[in-house]
Image (cartoon, rainbow, N blue to C red):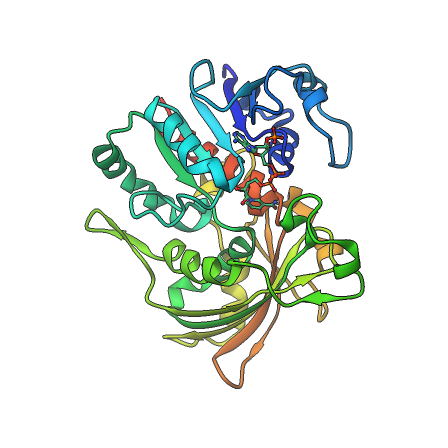
Length: 348
Ligand SMILES: NC(=O)c1ccc[n+]([C@@H]2O[C@H](COP(=O)([O-])OP(=O)(O)OC[C@H]3O[C@@H](n4cnc5c(N)ncnc54)[C@H](OP(=O)(O)O)[C@@H]3O)[C@@H](O)[C@H]2O)c1
């Protein structure tokens, strides 16, 4: 297969760097174009970027010239990691010019004609794209991935959708890398917990309903479940842990619930997508797992780990879910979205 050229909007930023790293050696996609603000334009990527990730900057990207985030010479597929203050205009300009924008920013996630895609959960939501084209008149398209805490929650819940999800109370313990760079000052977070992340609880509640909802009658319909989120920043580098209490329409036996986690498989696995984990949800029977430091990086950071499944005296069950926030919650999620779209023939 000829490599498919791709670009990254906001390539110099934290999430942009994760895209650059994640795309290194990708079997389908080749990163040939990087865009950022006018501060970086016309510089070599290595000169415009302070590389903050473990390992060296990929050599094949270091000498690319950073372009303005304007359509023109960019490849058809662009991953977006631009600052939220400019993402709306930039992403729309690219879609209008015929690009497939696979976005990580929050700006279009809740738009009624934009898929908020998690390939293991709602591949059928891509069915809204013809409507997006009709309504917006774009020859291109915008597809988004969820917020980094929502991905841990929804992946953990995906195997339970069959039992009917009615109510959720969730508490997050979110890593500092989720706040970008430099993020939370060390004096605030060391030996501490910050019980507030601006806008996060609202995003988690709304995005979860949209992701777990259906595509019926030509519309995306949100799941009618009540979701209450408490979001906290903790002194962990990578990996968002979420504690979940859930009420179900049909309460399964404990063993059936564990079996639902262990046997869960979905579209990316059937299609053998390059970034898909073999098993998207991994149940850990140990009494004290999953843990961010020990488990988030496993399976290339693309799986969701669940554990501590037990009866809940208030709702039906409670358990824990963990996902790598900058991989499965950002760059890896968007790349998997693009792989799914490519394998479905949506990117001609
Ligand atoms: N950090 C996370 O873990 C995380 C997780 C999920 C989603 N997100 C979302 O991902 C996006 C990027 O976050 P980040 O943490 O990577 O931010 P960041 O480190 O501040 O990077 C922002 C990027 O946007 C570019 N940019 C800024 N102003 C621009 C403009 N006027 N025109 C074009 N490009 C511009 C910057 O280019 P310069 O370097 O040239 O300034 C840089 O490449 C945000 O929308 C954020 O909400 C972040």
